Amino acid sequence: MALRFKSIYHISKMDCPSEEQLIRMKLSEYDSIEHLDFDIANRKLSVIHNGISTDILNLLEELKLDTELIAESETNESSSKLNDSSNERKILWAVLFINFSFFLIEILFGWVSKSMGLVADSLDMLADSIVYALSLIAVGQSTIRKKTVAKWSGYFQILLALIGLSEVIRRFISSEQMPVFQSMIAVSFLALVANALSLYLIQKAKSKEAHMQASAIFTSNDIIINLGVILAGVLVFLTKNQYPDLLIGTIVFVIVIQGAIRILKLAR
Image (tube, rainbow, N blue to C red; front, side):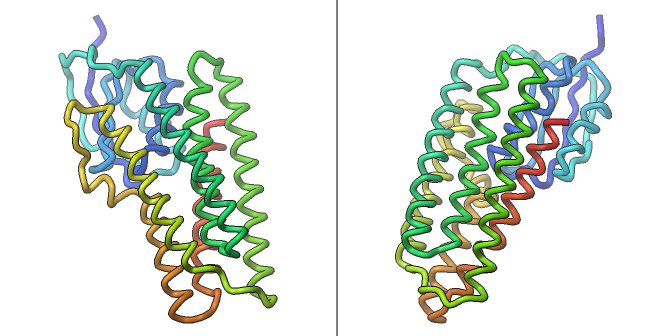
Protein backbone atom coordinates (compact mmCIF):
# COMPACT_ATOMS: atom_id res chain seq x y z
CA MET A 1 0.00 0.00 0.00
CA ALA A 2 1.43 3.39 -1.02
CA LEU A 3 2.32 5.84 1.69
CA ARG A 4 0.01 8.83 2.04
CA PHE A 5 1.30 12.28 2.91
CA LYS A 6 -0.10 15.59 4.03
CA SER A 7 1.85 18.54 2.63
CA ILE A 8 1.16 22.13 3.61
CA TYR A 9 2.09 25.00 1.30
CA HIS A 10 2.15 28.70 2.01
CA ILE A 11 0.99 30.66 -1.06
CA SER A 12 1.67 34.36 -0.51
CA LYS A 13 -0.41 35.65 -3.43
CA MET A 14 -3.44 33.41 -2.91
CA ASP A 15 -5.83 36.04 -1.63
CA CYS A 16 -9.13 35.46 -3.40
CA PRO A 17 -11.35 32.57 -4.53
CA SER A 18 -10.47 32.96 -8.22
CA GLU A 19 -6.84 32.11 -7.40
CA GLU A 20 -8.07 29.02 -5.55
CA GLN A 21 -9.81 27.91 -8.75
CA LEU A 22 -6.62 28.49 -10.76
CA ILE A 23 -4.74 26.26 -8.32
CA ARG A 24 -7.43 23.57 -8.48
CA MET A 25 -7.23 23.51 -12.27
CA LYS A 26 -3.45 23.40 -12.21
CA LEU A 27 -3.31 20.51 -9.74
CA SER A 28 -5.93 18.54 -11.65
CA GLU A 29 -2.99 17.45 -13.82
CA TYR A 30 -1.54 15.49 -10.88
CA ASP A 31 -3.33 12.15 -10.38
CA SER A 32 -1.83 11.34 -6.98
CA ILE A 33 -3.72 14.08 -5.13
CA GLU A 34 -6.61 12.85 -2.98
CA HIS A 35 -7.75 16.05 -1.29
CA LEU A 36 -7.16 19.81 -1.32
CA ASP A 37 -8.00 22.02 1.66
CA PHE A 38 -7.71 25.78 1.09
CA ASP A 39 -7.28 28.34 3.88
CA ILE A 40 -7.47 31.63 1.99
CA ALA A 41 -7.37 33.72 5.17
CA ASN A 42 -3.93 32.37 6.09
CA ARG A 43 -2.84 31.73 2.48
CA LYS A 44 -2.28 28.02 3.12
CA LEU A 45 -3.04 24.93 1.06
CA SER A 46 -3.08 21.44 2.60
CA VAL A 47 -2.74 18.53 0.19
CA ILE A 48 -3.30 14.84 0.93
CA HIS A 49 -1.43 12.84 -1.69
CA ASN A 50 0.63 9.72 -2.31
CA GLY A 51 3.17 11.25 -4.64
CA ILE A 52 6.19 13.48 -4.17
CA SER A 53 5.53 16.87 -2.59
CA THR A 54 8.13 18.63 -4.71
CA ASP A 55 6.23 17.63 -7.86
CA ILE A 56 3.19 19.47 -6.50
CA LEU A 57 5.39 22.42 -5.53
CA ASN A 58 6.77 22.62 -9.07
CA LEU A 59 3.25 22.79 -10.51
CA LEU A 60 2.26 25.52 -8.06
CA GLU A 61 5.37 27.55 -8.77
CA GLU A 62 4.40 27.74 -12.44
CA LEU A 63 1.51 30.01 -11.40
CA LYS A 64 3.97 32.53 -9.86
CA LEU A 65 2.00 32.90 -6.63
CA ASP A 66 5.06 32.74 -4.36
CA THR A 67 4.64 29.20 -3.03
CA GLU A 68 6.74 27.36 -0.48
CA LEU A 69 6.42 23.96 1.20
CA ILE A 70 6.24 24.56 4.96
CA ALA A 71 5.36 21.11 6.34
CA GLU A 72 5.09 17.48 5.25
CA SER A 73 4.24 14.32 7.15
CA GLU A 74 2.76 10.87 6.70
CA THR A 75 -0.96 10.80 7.42
CA ASN A 76 -3.84 8.45 8.06
CA GLU A 77 -6.31 11.28 7.69
CA SER A 78 -9.39 10.26 5.80
CA SER A 79 -9.99 11.87 2.44
CA SER A 80 -13.71 11.13 2.69
CA LYS A 81 -14.29 14.81 3.45
CA LEU A 82 -13.83 15.67 -0.22
CA ASN A 83 -16.14 18.46 -1.33
CA ASP A 84 -19.42 17.35 -2.82
CA SER A 85 -18.94 18.06 -6.52
CA SER A 86 -22.60 18.96 -7.06
CA ASN A 87 -22.53 21.54 -4.26
CA GLU A 88 -19.22 22.91 -5.52
CA ARG A 89 -20.66 23.41 -9.01
CA LYS A 90 -23.63 25.30 -7.55
CA ILE A 91 -21.27 27.61 -5.67
CA LEU A 92 -19.18 28.19 -8.81
CA TRP A 93 -22.30 29.02 -10.83
CA ALA A 94 -23.40 31.46 -8.11
CA VAL A 95 -20.09 33.35 -7.96
CA LEU A 96 -19.83 33.29 -11.76
CA PHE A 97 -23.26 34.94 -11.98
CA ILE A 98 -22.32 37.55 -9.36
CA ASN A 99 -19.01 38.45 -10.99
CA PHE A 100 -20.29 38.53 -14.58
CA SER A 101 -23.32 40.63 -13.58
CA PHE A 102 -21.06 43.21 -11.96
CA PHE A 103 -18.75 43.14 -14.96
CA LEU A 104 -21.72 44.31 -17.05
CA ILE A 105 -22.86 46.85 -14.44
CA GLU A 106 -19.40 48.36 -13.92
CA ILE A 107 -18.42 48.58 -17.57
CA LEU A 108 -21.76 50.27 -18.38
CA PHE A 109 -21.50 52.81 -15.55
CA GLY A 110 -17.77 53.21 -16.22
CA TRP A 111 -18.29 54.42 -19.79
CA VAL A 112 -21.36 56.51 -18.93
CA SER A 113 -19.62 58.22 -16.00
CA LYS A 114 -16.25 58.56 -17.82
CA SER A 115 -14.48 56.53 -15.11
CA MET A 116 -11.55 54.36 -16.18
CA GLY A 117 -11.35 53.06 -12.62
CA LEU A 118 -14.79 51.48 -12.96
CA VAL A 119 -14.00 50.15 -16.45
CA ALA A 120 -10.78 48.57 -15.15
CA ASP A 121 -12.57 47.09 -12.13
CA SER A 122 -15.18 45.63 -14.49
CA LEU A 123 -12.42 43.80 -16.34
CA ASP A 124 -11.14 42.48 -13.01
CA MET A 125 -14.65 41.11 -12.42
CA LEU A 126 -14.58 39.62 -15.93
CA ALA A 127 -11.20 38.02 -15.15
CA ASP A 128 -12.68 36.31 -12.09
CA SER A 129 -15.69 35.24 -14.17
CA ILE A 130 -13.35 33.64 -16.71
CA VAL A 131 -11.60 31.66 -13.97
CA TYR A 132 -14.90 30.38 -12.53
CA ALA A 133 -16.14 29.52 -16.03
CA LEU A 134 -12.91 27.67 -16.76
CA SER A 135 -13.36 25.69 -13.56
CA LEU A 136 -16.85 24.65 -14.64
CA ILE A 137 -15.78 23.88 -18.22
CA ALA A 138 -12.83 21.81 -17.00
CA VAL A 139 -15.11 19.29 -15.29
CA GLY A 140 -15.30 16.23 -17.47
CA GLN A 141 -13.28 17.78 -20.29
CA SER A 142 -9.97 16.64 -21.71
CA THR A 143 -6.75 18.38 -20.68
CA ILE A 144 -6.25 19.60 -24.25
CA ARG A 145 -9.69 21.22 -24.39
CA LYS A 146 -9.23 22.82 -20.97
CA LYS A 147 -5.88 24.30 -22.00
CA THR A 148 -7.27 25.58 -25.30
CA VAL A 149 -10.10 27.42 -23.53
CA ALA A 150 -7.64 28.81 -20.96
CA LYS A 151 -5.32 30.07 -23.70
CA TRP A 152 -7.96 32.00 -25.62
CA SER A 153 -9.49 33.36 -22.41
CA GLY A 154 -6.09 34.66 -21.33
CA TYR A 155 -5.42 36.33 -24.68
CA PHE A 156 -8.89 37.92 -24.68
CA GLN A 157 -8.33 39.28 -21.20
CA ILE A 158 -4.94 40.78 -22.15
CA LEU A 159 -6.44 42.37 -25.27
CA LEU A 160 -9.18 44.09 -23.25
CA ALA A 161 -6.67 45.33 -20.66
CA LEU A 162 -4.37 46.74 -23.36
CA ILE A 163 -7.31 48.54 -24.97
CA GLY A 164 -8.12 49.96 -21.54
CA LEU A 165 -4.54 51.14 -21.01
CA SER A 166 -4.53 52.84 -24.41
CA GLU A 167 -7.72 54.67 -23.43
CA VAL A 168 -6.08 55.80 -20.18
CA ILE A 169 -3.17 57.23 -22.17
CA ARG A 170 -5.54 58.98 -24.58
CA ARG A 171 -7.48 60.57 -21.71
CA PHE A 172 -4.27 61.60 -19.98
CA ILE A 173 -2.98 63.59 -22.97
CA SER A 174 -6.32 64.99 -24.13
CA SER A 175 -9.01 67.10 -22.56
CA GLU A 176 -11.75 64.89 -21.15
CA GLN A 177 -14.82 65.41 -19.04
CA MET A 178 -14.38 64.79 -15.34
CA PRO A 179 -15.48 61.32 -14.20
CA VAL A 180 -18.67 61.25 -12.13
CA PHE A 181 -17.26 60.55 -8.67
CA GLN A 182 -20.71 59.68 -7.25
CA SER A 183 -21.01 56.76 -9.67
CA MET A 184 -17.45 55.64 -8.93
CA ILE A 185 -18.11 55.47 -5.21
CA ALA A 186 -21.62 53.97 -5.34
CA VAL A 187 -20.96 51.27 -7.95
CA SER A 188 -17.60 50.31 -6.40
CA PHE A 189 -19.26 49.93 -3.02
CA LEU A 190 -21.84 47.56 -4.55
CA ALA A 191 -19.00 45.65 -6.26
CA LEU A 192 -17.24 45.38 -2.90
CA VAL A 193 -20.38 43.82 -1.42
CA ALA A 194 -20.59 41.44 -4.39
CA ASN A 195 -16.96 40.33 -3.92
CA ALA A 196 -17.52 39.85 -0.21
CA LEU A 197 -20.58 37.70 -0.98
CA SER A 198 -18.60 35.58 -3.46
CA LEU A 199 -15.86 35.01 -0.93
CA TYR A 200 -18.44 34.20 1.76
CA LEU A 201 -20.16 31.59 -0.40
CA ILE A 202 -16.90 29.79 -1.17
CA GLN A 203 -15.60 29.98 2.40
CA LYS A 204 -18.93 28.74 3.80
CA ALA A 205 -19.02 25.83 1.34
CA LYS A 206 -15.77 24.50 2.82
CA SER A 207 -16.84 24.79 6.43
CA LYS A 208 -19.74 23.79 8.63
CA GLU A 209 -19.49 27.19 10.31
CA ALA A 210 -21.98 29.75 9.10
CA HIS A 211 -19.68 32.74 9.47
CA MET A 212 -16.76 33.88 7.34
CA GLN A 213 -13.40 34.88 8.69
CA ALA A 214 -12.99 38.64 8.65
CA SER A 215 -9.31 38.31 7.80
CA ALA A 216 -10.23 36.52 4.58
CA ILE A 217 -12.42 39.41 3.52
CA PHE A 218 -9.85 42.09 4.13
CA THR A 219 -6.98 40.23 2.49
CA SER A 220 -8.96 39.75 -0.71
CA ASN A 221 -7.21 41.48 -3.60
CA ASP A 222 -10.53 42.16 -5.32
CA ILE A 223 -11.91 44.03 -2.33
CA ILE A 224 -8.74 46.08 -2.02
CA ILE A 225 -9.26 47.09 -5.66
CA ASN A 226 -12.84 48.13 -4.90
CA LEU A 227 -11.62 50.27 -2.00
CA GLY A 228 -9.02 51.78 -4.34
CA VAL A 229 -11.70 52.88 -6.81
CA ILE A 230 -13.77 54.36 -3.97
CA LEU A 231 -10.70 56.29 -2.76
CA ALA A 232 -10.05 57.47 -6.32
CA GLY A 233 -13.64 58.76 -6.48
CA VAL A 234 -13.12 60.72 -3.27
CA LEU A 235 -9.86 62.17 -4.63
CA VAL A 236 -11.54 63.15 -7.91
CA PHE A 237 -14.05 65.12 -5.83
CA LEU A 238 -11.38 66.75 -3.66
CA THR A 239 -8.84 67.54 -6.40
CA LYS A 240 -11.33 68.36 -9.16
CA ASN A 241 -9.29 66.45 -11.79
CA GLN A 242 -9.35 63.05 -13.45
CA TYR A 243 -5.83 61.88 -12.53
CA PRO A 244 -6.78 59.76 -9.48
CA ASP A 245 -9.25 57.87 -11.70
CA LEU A 246 -6.65 57.34 -14.42
CA LEU A 247 -4.09 56.16 -11.86
CA ILE A 248 -6.35 53.53 -10.29
CA GLY A 249 -7.45 52.47 -13.77
CA THR A 250 -3.83 51.90 -14.80
CA ILE A 251 -3.07 49.89 -11.65
CA VAL A 252 -6.11 47.64 -12.09
CA PHE A 253 -5.45 47.08 -15.82
CA VAL A 254 -1.94 45.88 -14.90
CA ILE A 255 -3.41 43.54 -12.28
CA VAL A 256 -5.82 42.17 -14.91
CA ILE A 257 -2.90 41.48 -17.27
CA GLN A 258 -1.06 39.65 -14.46
CA GLY A 259 -4.16 37.52 -13.89
CA ALA A 260 -4.36 36.74 -17.60
CA ILE A 261 -0.74 35.61 -17.59
CA ARG A 262 -1.58 33.17 -14.79
CA ILE A 263 -4.45 31.80 -16.87
CA LEU A 264 -2.12 31.38 -19.84
CA LYS A 265 0.21 29.32 -17.64
CA LEU A 266 -2.61 26.76 -17.39
CA ALA A 267 -2.47 26.44 -21.18
CA ARG A 268 1.13 25.20 -21.20
